[in-house]
Length: 283
Ligand SMILES: *[C@@H]1O[C@H](CO)[C@@H](O)[C@H](O)[C@H]1NC(C)=O
Ligand SMILES: *[C@@H]1O[C@H](CO)[C@@H](O)[C@H](O)[C@H]1NC(C)=O
Ligand SMILES: *[C@@H]1O[C@H](CO)[C@@H](O)[C@H](O)[C@H]1NC(C)=O
Ligand SMILES: *[C@@H]1O[C@H](CO)[C@@H](O)[C@H](O)[C@H]1NC(C)=O
Ligand SMILES: *[C@@H]1O[C@H](CO)[C@@H](O)[C@H](O)[C@H]1NC(C)=O
Ligand SMILES: *[C@@H]1O[C@H](CO)[C@@H](O)[C@H](O)[C@H]1NC(C)=O
Ligand SMILES: *[C@@H]1O[C@H](CO)[C@@H](O)[C@H](O)[C@H]1NC(C)=O
Ligand SMILES: *[C@@H]1O[C@H](CO)[C@@H](O)[C@H](O)[C@H]1NC(C)=O
Picture 1 (cartoon, rainbow, N blue to C red):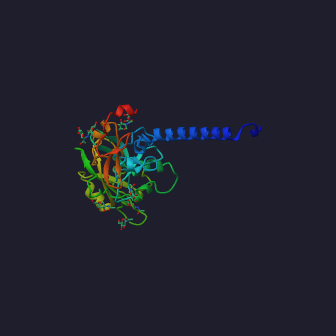
Picture 2 (tube, rainbow, N blue to C red):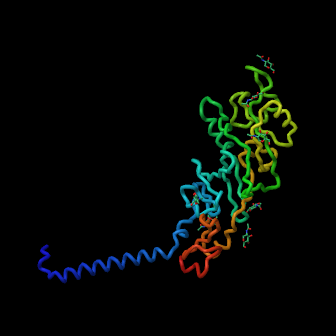
Picture 3 (cartoon, helix red, strand yellow):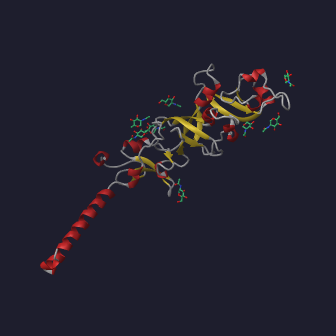
């Protein structure tokens, strides 16, 4: 193409028109994007894979922004697709089985009771290695989590049980039935679990070293195997800002880290408690 056929002025005009057009389209797309607040866009429900909705006050580290949740409600995901809550004050990992957003409760159990099952499939070694990092549950003093439930009992988990000495270390017959499934690597490595009202608790404390005391709810009743009860876990109530007013106004609940306050992320901008205007028009 020979550009010299066009007079220079026309050429310049053409270029300017293209440039102005480019500017206009660019600024208009930027403007339409800017009308929806990025916090609002960012805070969508996620799942670890098991289908549970993870939303305020919880947020999944690496999947959701921390401003979509409340401080202290950070979750991670395990390989099985369960959300994991790591309560402060220990390395304990709690599998979240169900979150009841309607009454701010959740059911959890220590993941060690699930991990020991898969560790039995390995050859050799101590089947109950997973218990080495076991700690008593300790809640932070801010009452973010508290136990709920009527049929809760305290179960003692004990290990290093023996009557004899040296090579002849055996478990008392009465404690054999208290062995937790999955820890069958000989008596000396037995892990036993005993209810707080079990008359053999004293015997177990004599023969074994106590590891932890963990709350367990009566899922399935007394006849249910101890390991099933341990895996069923217990319920806790959480305390965080009430999300429902914000949610009902069309917003997404979140948290402002700089002011350390609840925020309601609305399509237009973050609000203090709820959205104003007609949220439907932003769909
Ligand atoms: C997740 O949320 C959606 C939308 O409210 C709902 O339809 C679905 O049943 C929820 N899933 C679970 C497992 O609660
Ligand atoms: C997100 O999950 C919560 C809790 O299950 C549910 O109430 C809400 O409807 C979900 N929101 C969407 C957009 O799915
Ligand atoms: C949250 O607020 C709503 C509406 O005010 C109320 O119905 C609900 O019971 C509250 N939820 C909790 C857990 O306090
Ligand atoms: C919370 O709600 C669920 C069902 O929505 C119910 O099964 C559970 O008992 C309730 N928990 C409390 C502590 O009220
Ligand atoms: C195992 O039990 C013996 C007493 O029977 C105790 O001296 C020892 O410290 C215990 N070992 C561990 C690792 O707790
Ligand atoms: C080990 O102890 C049991 C009873 O506690 C006893 O019957 C058995 O003979 C002992 N074995 C050895 C080798 O000492
Ligand atoms: C857990 O608590 C029980 C009694 O409440 C105690 O005997 C045990 O040593 C504690 N375990 C740890 C690891 O602190
Ligand atoms: C809150 O902000 C501080 C400083 O800006 C930062 O160090 C901290 O990691 C933030 N916390 C969360 C949960 O984002």
